[in-house]
Image 1 (cartoon, one colour):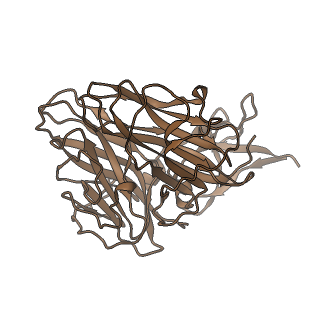
Image 2 (image 1 turned 90 degrees about the vertical axis):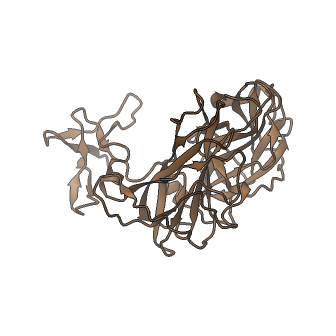
Amino acid sequence: MQTEIKAIQRITGDEVYLEMNQGNELLVAQGSARYEDATRTGKRFSFRNTTGVAAVTAIPTVATNCAFCNTDPDGGRSAIIDTIFASQVGNASAALDQYFIIWILGQTRVAQLTDGALIPRKMNGMGPTSDTCLTIAVGGVDLDAVTGVEAGWMPACSSRNSAVTTLPGIHLIAQMDGLIIIPPGRILGLHVVASEATPTFAMGIQWHERILTLA
Amino acid sequence: METKLRAKNRVTEVAGDLQGTEAGEALVAMGAAEYEDITRSGQAFHCINPTTTAAVIAVGTTAAHLSIWNSADDGGKSIIIDAIFGFAVAGAAVLYQVGLIYVLGQTRVASNGGAIVVRRNNGYGATSDSVALCDDVATLDAVTGVAVGWMPVGNSVTSAVVSLGGLAIFERVDGRIIVPPGRLLGIKPLASAVGTTWQVGAMWHEKVITLG
């Protein structure tokens, strides 16, 4: 049996045959922006550490710029990481520098860190309250020793160089697009590695949440 | 027979007709982040070579900072590379530029005996059933490790200062490289100057796929 596929034209409401290219591949068009529907749901959020924390010059173990704890019970919501970012908020360095973001994802359930009590902001602007599974631990908080092991830290973006000394203004953005998920009970730690420890960064993430069957 | 495609609206739960453009293109929307379901499945992993090692200044042949060997039998899981990355622990004594290069073996070779801990991207460790054996500061076999096989991955970066760390490269590969059963993947940094030391790693997912 052969079936010809039709769709309803969004503008006119008329029926239209779906078409293929020269290689018989179905042609599609983007009906909405990449994260539009996830944002629309009110389940996409952003957190940013309000405190500038000095970069590290070597891969740490438990030290962080900030950390994100999934407070849901097992079987609850997972936090799917869309973006990690770092904004340079201070720079007393008299030398040019280079910087990149690192992350570490805990592999086992651990105790939650002290909640920094910052309010996550909804990416669709429908705040000010939010119902999220993440809390942010700020101020350069230390991870537990099980989560924070040197072998677990990975870079998230290519490095950037400063063009001037003593002034801030560097921003690092890492598009993760779901490459990392924080499951219930785990912690994601973030930091900036730099060529010296003088610059300070405020780091954060954008994420969305849903209940996933994790294996 | 003509068929109009219908599906259930996620919000209203009412069935509706698939929408198209004026030109007959199906209108689509992303229901999840690009890697969300792959990561959810527990078959997505990452690792990094733990021993800080000097970048090379020539392409070379068998030397690699990290090798990943697919331990599956023929017909088993493939390793689909999502990202390759590395960072400098120390810089060179002069300003320098550096990029990452990789070599993908084309024939089945012996195990690299790798024992680097592989971590799950969804945090559901600490054990993993990955087929990837990852070896630190590896020497590839002479069939895999040939000069003509090393290719760049991602743009290079340049240092702003001498001697210090702080450089990194993170390149999304998005499946452009697949390590089939029995093959080796080697990764290392290629720099313009000696003295800079690096760790390199990868993110990947695994599944059984029919390879041509």
